[in-house]
Length: 248
Length: 248
DNA sequence: CGGAACGTTGATGTATCTCAAGTGGGGTGG
DNA sequence: CCACCCCACTTGAGATACATCAACGTTCCG
Image (cartoon, rainbow over all chains, first blue to last red; front, side):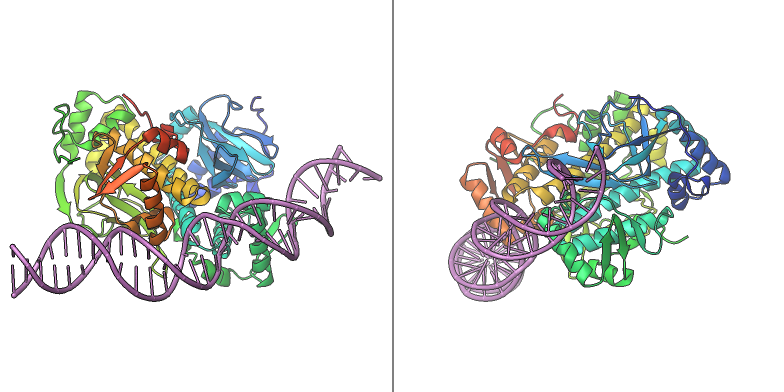
């Protein structure tokens, strides 16, 4: 399986969520943004449930999620899965990992994914301090997000966990301009949600019903709508600062 | 089993656990190791329960734990705490974080801590590719460790969580030469352990008793001994690869 | 039209929490 | 050197959030 070079023109304003996200994390010049766009030369569409970490990709480099949901996860011997992060549009993931451990990664929905070779990436980082800083900021945000998930699973109730996750996702989708009126695509199953927040899918179901009944959210036909972000944030004790600069 | 403060073996005496740890993550020349030792500008001893993130340190740079336990954590409004990582001897922590969020960090025991100014660190990274690589590997390992904790809290039973944590700690202490006969210093309270693994301190107590009774560990006078690493690893499904190159 | 995947519901079980009351040991001051 | 005190640890009883098991409903799509 190779990377067909197919440039999609369907990005908002021709700007990929990738440079949109990085543009929030550092002050990118228009040259920087253009360079990032240029680096994303090859794009492919991948079906749901596909592996992203394996040998399906040619060489070392970076994956960039343009559309859809991906995740990183860990498996236990008995088959139970802990999802450790989501990749949503604009997110990227280094596929290096000199570490022996195979970093498990897969798609949770149909995805459009770009690939940036390591050489191109390194050149970019070297030529633009802003890009380098944006990438380093992205790493800091990813780390903080992971710690926030640990807090959720360790110390929050089921209702708070889901509320916090939805607040986080709305904020992240907003940051790449893919939230519309507090709504965003959410094609994950309740099973996936359970594997994310350390809950059984049955309990996820009941907790979602509770959130719906209390008018916090609606979740229909793979679209999640936050009905009252302030109230939901309060319920979850959500503080958006860990996600980086939030508004312009 | 007594616990000698100074290393029993003569090898690398006077070498900080910091360069010891980094030396495992990349091939450091003797110049690299010496440069790392030299980079340590100042060393201080800090009592238990002290803040590490605040203004206690002069400027931007990196903290290096030389002795003792530190942690990073998140607090909830109700005061409950989730510890998100341990800093044990050899570990370091960037105190940059352009992120607005104050990164919470404190000591869990009396600590000896070194400080490396950012300028010195940057110079080191630029002058030695090996050091840069070691630092980047350390970041990968830290990330993997965080994900493993998320797996623990999300999907493992109390007994498995503690077992996994102890396997991890033994491996990490071994990596810096501070484990002796499967024993290492463990001055944390059961309260701290609960905040680490998302458990109440009462349940930690009962789980520890169970592990002791089954001859997995002993934990007396702040020394933890793993009685049967193979069995404990099996119980926890511990796979050390995420911690980096393990032997030699 | 049928099957598979996802969602919903009810009943029951259990791991873990909370509350509450001790116990023990290592410093400290007298 | 002893007595005391504080903090960590221990133990028991009862509560509960969440898991598991087992149906059944619904949607989607070939």
